[in-house]
Image (cartoon, rainbow, N blue to C red):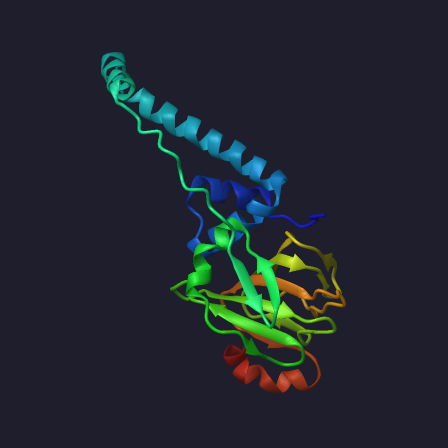
Length: 222
């Protein structure tokens, strides 16, 4: 069951089309998995469309509007069969993960899987710009060392479940972490856990030996 969602403000900004591309992508993927948020986005989108229509209509005289509608209705619309989008599947060491529809296209920009500390695997995604995106997989018993964030991190659970000392997360859950949060993501699920993350600055490790790699954290989570 999905318990963690984008805020209404985030969903409204997404629906208005003014959100940064990377953030828009991860929220779109969450909506692929969450009917509740998808319905909210639909409502926000309708409200924005009505507002825009009213603004445009206020500047158009009735005769011009009638001519415009006549032109539209007189056009022949091609209603050919549209291609049905199929969800892409990621593979790692024999495991297969079905992606939310919005993440289909970025799988083509995905780098190779690399093994990080412990039982953590990472595959970078090239989104362009300064935002860093990754698929991260934690095997059963895997854990990311305790850390906080120099910037912000958005995470979507694509498959599986994990805990971080703050809460328990399941498939579809969406979270935003920043410098106010200190957590230690880990999973004991047999199937492990796959997440999609975007960050704008490297992590900052806060405990034990992991603090030693802070000067190089951008090399591990890039």
